[in-house]
Length: 76
Image 1 (cartoon, rainbow, N blue to C red):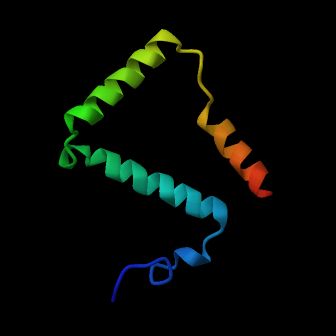
Image 2 (image 1 turned 180 degrees about the vertical axis):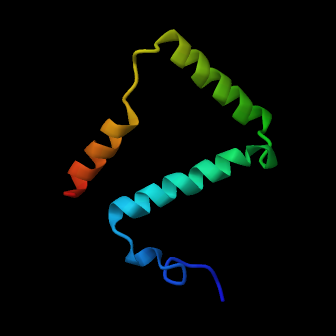
């Protein structure tokens, strides 16, 4: 049997539960990040983004605001 949204019962979860599950899955992938080595280009891009953030640390939008904005646009 293959793994799918239906076989795992994920299709029965509401949107908030599915979003929470996606966040949890993503966190588990990040925890295994050593298994995904970066290329030199990826490392350079990350270094550039970190430097950009260091230069303007107040130029950010909190994740909760991004989620609320996306949900508002989707009518949820």
